[in-house]
Image (cartoon, rainbow, N blue to C red):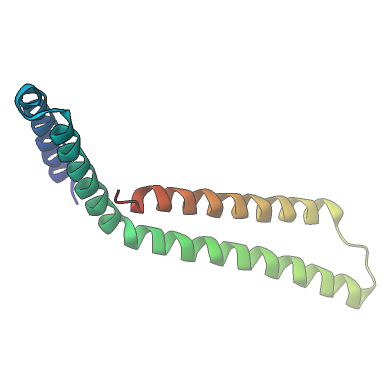
Length: 120
């Protein structure tokens, strides 16, 4: 969805909310809240639909980065074992930190996905 479309949608929601406030004296607050709830649900549903491909590609990218980091760690251990060398602790620490950060990023990514996919 382009910015213009979202700007139009948000302008419509703001106008509807303003109209609801004017009507609250006649229709009561429950109708206004019900209307806002419907608009909120429609907006989140539209947004989550637009974001699905981005979340899917992001998850695939994060998985690939994690796999590559794990592959490097495994290769280092195999090489060190095969050649009888000491492991490069500093490099392993950096890779472990990177792997941990990728896990944290994917957890945050999942949280954002949950927030944006809620429709209630």
